[in-house]
Image (cartoon, rainbow, N blue to C red; front, side):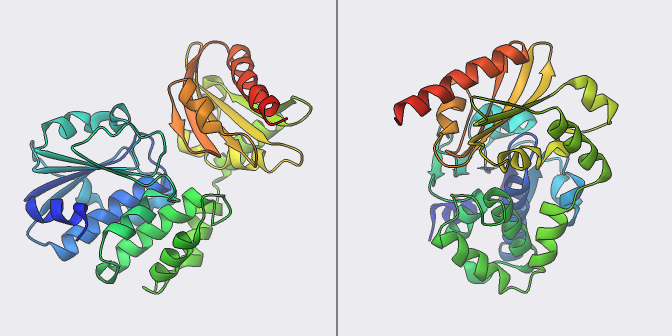
Length: 316
């Protein structure tokens, strides 16, 4: 029996939380584990702590999971969260819990719980969870949720984090009868008109530097307000930039505050963007990482490209 199942068995009340601005893997792992527990341990009281779930994942939005008035839990399970501060409003709930478990796949995870289970080689937290739970007891809803997380963090099995275990687990989830094609189309590829508009704007205003090896785009708060866009409306923009012919690194800057930017980075083959993100206090994976940097957009891009250039030079 895995350490996670042992902790679940011992607890009467369980809180599940993920990172701020939840993505497919975060939502999939949180909602999937919620369903697994209530289906297999009906005596447990479970509550999920997540920020607003984007419309693309409405099929995973079980409102009863997000409701409750328990003030102190026997167990808090943190999923897909690299550091304590990224739990957002759930952080006080984490501190108040009797036992705390941290399950993740980010190499930069800070191991902030009583029990830390981090598999940096895994494609996603959903893949990690499938290895910790009894596959035979995963229900239909959980299978949809875990499959969602896997496809989103692997770019539908295209990213370098896709391994043999990833494909085997995805296959077992598909055997549960889930509409895997529909999940891919509607949660990953389908875009709203607003998303298409802001993506077009980002691509139109993108700039290539370092002999075309780096492409970046900057999204100001003014532009976000103009399109009445949410942060989730930028999903997919950076991956579209990354596929530009001749590009090794794509960078998307989103203005958070005056002279402060959220930085998302993707690379194709050579650059370890997690090293760059970690230097600036962020984290992530070798080919996908992010951080927050203060300064003008010009300064931020200059600082990041210096690190990229160093990695290029080290490879010569």
